[in-house]
Image (cartoon, rainbow, N blue to C red):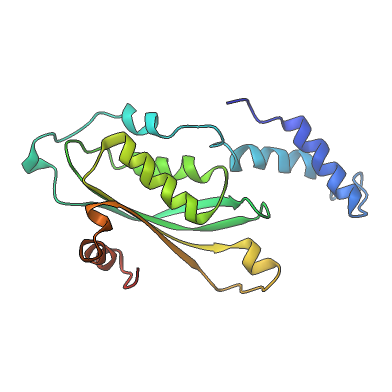
Length: 194
């Protein structure tokens, strides 16, 4: 992955400010291009990064069937991403569950997975699919379920302006694609739908 071109972002932001009729040199805006460029470096740090090696770097644990458990569920993983249609943020939580097969991974790896996949221009629908696919490729679990609930800046701040609405998306694989098993996990998450 090529590093983010900070000077180019600064120039582009200055051009946008000038294009809307602002004085780029006025004190309140003088450092805005630099601040936005640095923020974009953080917002888009996942562009071109494959999260699977991050999941496989950790020591695998509990390879004996009786030590794996029936289900691993991490609830309320905070996430922040940028809608690829408007480059406005969406924020919320991800709930990630998997049914262990041969391997399990450290619990801290799952929030890191969500963080990497979120740090790129993204659609919420694809975000859940990307998380599920990466987990599937990394540890080949018997089932995966990813539920994301988020508020979108593009919905709250422009157009229809539904500031309090949330969007829920679901991505499932393997045994957790079965409606009965998925419903059991949704009950553990605290959601009754999907």
